[in-house]
Image 1 (cartoon, helix red, strand yellow):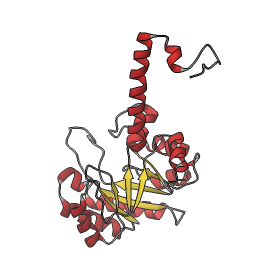
Image 2 (image 1 turned 90 degrees about the vertical axis):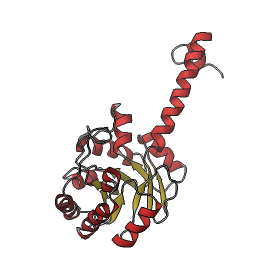
Image 3 (image 1 turned 180 degrees about the vertical axis):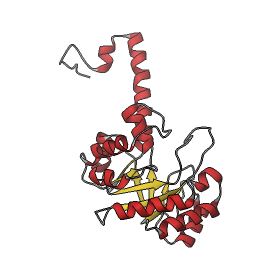
Image 4 (image 1 turned 90 degrees about the horizontal axis):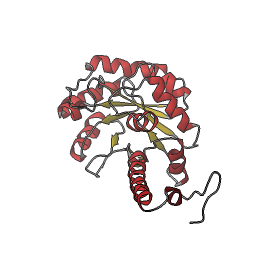
Length: 241
């Protein structure tokens, strides 16, 4: 099992590489938050996702896995960004990650989009992962597995049952027969998965650290010069701390 930390930007990706991880992930959640200050509700374009992925592949030498959401023509865009693998989902994007009703593409449409993605790739080492949100959205494992079977038959290299726990993963693995990708969730057991994406790893830690630093800065500003807290003493000069 390969645990893949999620980056938020080029610097965090480079730090992930420097700490010996063999692979890095960039998802729509981290892209929306770090690059645009937005929630992950399907507002980004394919061009925006691919451009952010390109900034990360340019910073590291390890493979980068990227979130292609449900876009057509994702393979040319992410191949051009030098990404090693993408996952393509069957969620329509309507109301995604909100309290609004969620919807999936018909299985025939989603399977054809996987088939088109496989046909579009020019690099045989570029991996295409088929993601189904059926278990996450509808809690329907049988529909999720039926969908993943169709996507595997369409040529997907791996399958991704969103929010599947250990029991569900075992059943998917038994019935689909493809390597599994999953995202980390509240249950840290991911037996049977080939790749676990820690999608919010960098953005969550960066946010928490920055929030603490800003709180400390506010306290310092209330009790003394903010410049002293920041470590600066005039333009271009640093104080000794």
